Length: 267
Image (cartoon, rainbow, N blue to C red):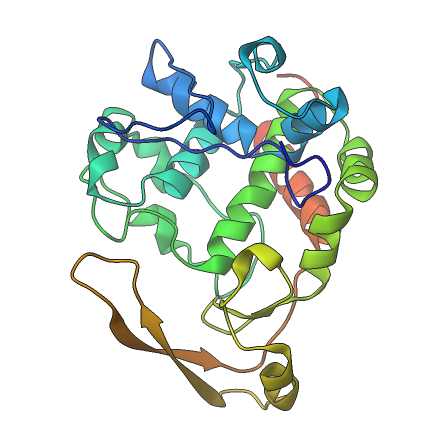
């Protein structure tokens, strides 16, 4: 466990027929709902805070078992966002189809921004397609912000407590949030995040285009070696203007949105 890094508890759903070494800890669930709910909770900073506070260097069942799987009124919103973050390829299609609900189609983003398209939810169908999961950096960040808020609400926390945990226990995440810039298509155009080496332009390159006028376009060519069949040259387009996000402000916006949707305090 990286106790001093951006995040300490880092979870993901692995597809069937996948194995791993002892560097990871697997948890098997009796049903898909608990699997996806817990994965959502594990992506939140309240659960991350619990693991950080234990102060242990390794994660084992004795320190992850106390983390609850809660059955609350927020389940549908949590399930939808957790799924959209994880079902990234066809090997997750069974999971998506088994947990499909028409309720996902009436979900909405808590924040108003053209990079957060309402059709991300309204166009969802039971059949998994390449367009089902969240794929832009901006969408995925927003889903994680909303999961933080929904998890805090499910735990009976207050907004002030959520923001206090963020301020005190996640200084590296704060540092990365303060210097991660997005283009108008939701791509990261520059970030100081050390785990995202090679994403976006270098600092020197970004300083030259940072204040570009609206609709100006910039291009970056990369060698993509992530797919079978060998390296492929790709060109990425970035559209100005570029901006950053304020996580605490986004927490406040999301809190008001979900309070209006679900009511306050009672689960």
